[in-house]
Picture 1 (cartoon, rainbow, N blue to C red):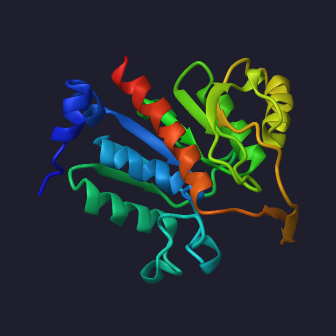
Picture 2: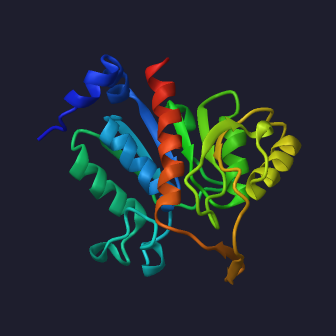
Length: 227
């Protein structure tokens, strides 16, 4: 059974064919990335790469679309692949069960667009360097400790307030990356973080990552249908 894309075609016409032919890879399948993968599948993107090495845990349930009872302990890539197949059976899904880092061998030129939903700065910088001037990349900035669904897209060097964007600007400048399309919020972060194994974990709420994912998906889909 193929997905019925008639409602999408009513809105974007032949752009639906462009989406069916497009290849997009999503790095990180957490609060933002899980929704981005879903939005791409429902829009009719024909080939979706998914990258993550984590499994679904109870702490994911407050904000991650892949986190349901039957998926606890399941890899996020497997859960995402199954969900995409249940939405858009014609979509090809390529699974990368890895933590993306400098030594990862992924041919990004295979893809039309990349979605960076990673929460590790070093990995985000590595992805930006690899895509720079070669592959369309949209990178999500911080969604933790945010209470409002106010996200917008801009070049990284035009951002303000977001602490992650501030770090990214500094590191990208050092790396010689002069432009990067990002999704970010100008809301001042609330609360604090909790240290878990050396990682600083922020607070989160159900709708904020999904709101950021909406803007991410809009940027990617618009880029594909406007080519």
